[in-house]
Length: 423
Image (cartoon, rainbow, N blue to C red; front, side, top):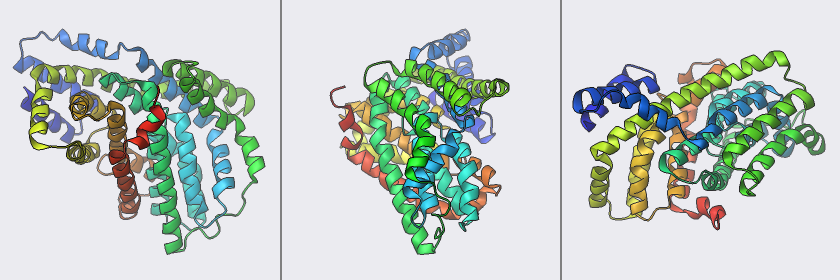
């Protein structure tokens, strides 16, 4: 059955069938021709895959991100970041990274971060003399922080699929996200100095006091959400509902950039995004059930133990595997299919499942900036109004930067775990 599932899945992906449909059809194909189970198991397993309290956080965080994107938050965060780091050469490019890091703690989505911040900073960088492909590439690579810095939808999905603590994963993602952001800032600073870009980036910059006052309510949201979760005031799922209420309050009554007429479109967009993710989760749960039933995890586990004598070697293999997978398969789908298989093997090597989850998510996040899938690349190219192929030459430098950060996160577990001690 495993070979049939793999072949059918690859064929459907090659034919550009939507991810959720491809996974569901592969599972139905396996049940029909390689098992005696009735097709009634299909809706049953899809339902049980979605019947999870932590998954309620997904639609709420998506809605909160949409509300904050439309509510004037992105402009104020850009001004805030620019007031801090925008005065130096390459300041606009550095502002892009820092703003994406902050916005990631609001939206939980890399694509939302690309559109919300890129719509402001890509034209600004181009106007200040940056080549358009470079500006778009910096935006796309910075936006991947949206799935690493908590709250993160892929983290919730990994936690549910591997029965890992969402709170610990959120805590574990903070330092790796900040490390990647710091390395990207260093990268763009060196890049700009070598190429002579960004010499006028300090123009029209607000004072720190002014920008902080304008962005105060936006900056308060991640503090409330993450502080409430880590302080034990509410669970991550409850925090997502708090985020929606707060985002609605700020957008409508404080910044006053959301009107009642805007709400139907905001809710519709959030509903469509949620439906797409939930359909992937449901069908991937069905596929995972079949894979586990076939004994494939035990086979892979035995093969790994026979070929990799140390956790270091296993983690290197996993990173290479996930890098290739991330190029072709959407992040949530990859986590749902591979997480339940690889996490138990990692645990057998003595690797903390929280640390392994961070490694997996950071690695798959690179798939958002690597062709052919590269959703961030297409989003940034759309904002910059250029063919995505023009970004490929400038992509190598930020990609190598993230790879170096990934290796540090992989082989120094305390980067992810030291904040989780005692939880």
